[in-house]
Image 1 (spheres, rainbow over the protein chains, first blue to last red):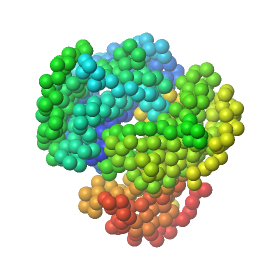
Image 2: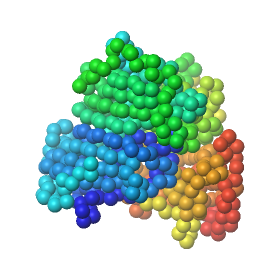
Image 3: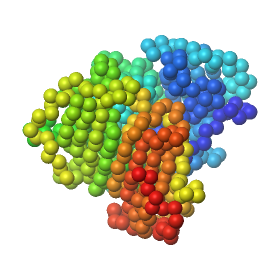
Image 4: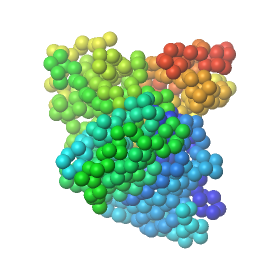
Length: 141
Length: 141
Length: 141
Length: 141
């Protein structure tokens, strides 16, 4: 995480991400956002595969809203920025946005739950003590 | 379209749609929703490929919000229901939801724009005169 | 299965399947092929989800070769044809091809194994007695 | 390109790449392979978006064979290795393989054509003079 608590995930747009209009297919921004959140969690010491094997837990998106401002195109280098707005033991609220240089392409707000195999909410060990991060609660929008 | 102006698109969940948690990957509901909107538009006489070739137009999602209630699983038969809430010449507002039998799994609200090659809004021929459908404006939520 | 032992799976090409070249992205033919094999197996009484839950088994592709003859495009209606060439208790050999009307777009040959959780080959109940089907062993190519 | 003419593309496996069996879905190795080829071409001075805009050309896979040796899993770090076996003006033959550390997971052989808008073969400027690379023609298999 950078010092102002914004996690930055750089990535490239490939053919697989585009559609016949010549731009990134809208569902794929959710794939990009999930890659970024996965790397943010990894930076916090939480690995998805371990979480599943050792604690039988996984993060699931419960709610999300997306605002598509401008399209990304083939070969673009994008940055997916993630800011954790709120961290509970079994939940996360995140603001994410996709930028190409200084241009914001997509804004997202997501609410995630950490859930056990049976679908019930469960706390991921090591997540809650992150709660006091001073850079949080600064929304972009 | 059924008589109460709800378009129903039936579909099956395949391995490609699922992830290592054993459920449908969250981004894929947007793929399902787009299949359903495409078939609804086809029923209204608007084909995406023709729209692109003949009028240089394409529908783009501008805003969307998703509420993930319950997960879908491998081999599930789903129904994607679409209700057009508002139709302008160059825009559409749609409510969509994914059901398995009578259980609602995902709720979605989307705002779409019809755009020309250069990204400017443009009216799709034949869309606006659908506006007066009496079954519209009934939201699920 | 039709009378000459060719299973036919009809499908539509959506935006999600295409890329910026304006044609179906090459990897997606493997998604289409898997949908078709899944429906063929379902017709034979074998459901993937049940196979996993009740027998801890899944089919995995071990080898495949693909020949891309012509591209499919947005809104195309395709037929994925599947012919089982050889059925062992723990393996399958299939010829598949993707057609648009009478034009063959992609030819595929696949070798699949039925495997247990631990990656070892295992026989799926109910598969081997299909072996004597007289329509088999007729390759297209 | 490393000194022995093997291009190495490192990547991570995310949830989007996996399926309900808990491993990488077979079609996705073709996505990984295409990312690697794209970066190899970029290293050779050929960008897909430019190729399309300036020369109206795109590379299309004409033939491919895949050998699935072992599965990749969530969170794996993979290396996609690419070796150009043969370069013509309008065609490419490539060997690719996906490794996790020293373990080969998937072997691929691909034949690509460079094609104009109308589907006819066409030479990409700047490709043929790469032909004499001494490290070529060493197949892995």
